[in-house]
Structure formats: C-alpha cells, structure tokens
Amino acid sequence: MGRYQAIIWKAAVFFFYLWLVSFIQSKLQTLAAESFIVYPYIIFGQTAYIPAGFLLKFEKITQWRKKDVLWRWNRKGVGVITLCLYFLLVPFVLPLPALLPGVLVTNPSASPVVQMVAGYAAAACFLKERR
Image 1 (cartoon, rainbow, N blue to C red):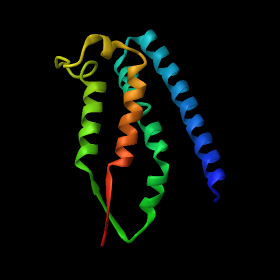
Image 2: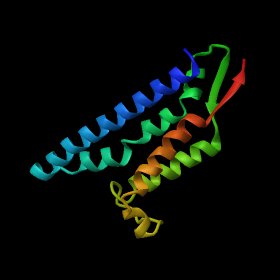
Image 3: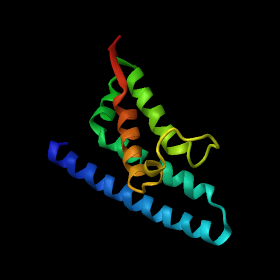
C-alpha cells in the first residue's frame, strides 16, 4: 500500500472512530439522564479518545508484526501514561483529592487532549530490541 493510500485509510478510520465515539457518548448521556446511572458515561467520556491517540502512532503499530524484534516498555512512556490516567480518573472516579487545579480538571477541552496524549504515549513507549 502506498504512503498516500495509508494516510487516506488512517484518516477514514480516525473519523469513523470519532463518529462512533460521538454516537456512543450520546446514547450513554441519554441513559445517564433517564436512569441516573452516570458512571458508564463518565468513564467512557474520560477514556474514549485514548485509542484515537493510539491510532495517530499507527506507523509504530504496523512494525509490531515483525518477528525478529522484542518489545518492552519505555519507563518514560509508562510515566506519561500513569500521569494521564491520574488526570483523567482521579477527580471523577476515585475518591482521592486532586493535585491539579480545579480549573484544569473541569475544563472540557483538557480531557480529550490528555486522552490523545495517553494513547500516543502508549503506542510510542515501546522499545525495540533485536533478538
């Protein structure tokens, strides 16, 4: 597959995923409003865009199919993922005091950006080693 075809497929899959997330999120929002079950809506809203960030590093993912390399985690990447998950889940799901300012936690634009960073870091934090 050519480079431009791969970019077009990647964009198509990315936008389909964003449409799917929007559809599921609207259904969960309706469920939360009607039955007062809010945790599925909150958890989905705080983790839905992580695979989209993972998809942005798609070239790294396609290298996983090679059989002559070993993969292991990069410590810095694991730290970034841990920090991102702390930012996403602690203020909303876990009853722990947040270390971040309330303005940053309640900003509706911050959560999708942090989720994309977490997904990108998850795909980028693998180290390749020769066998």
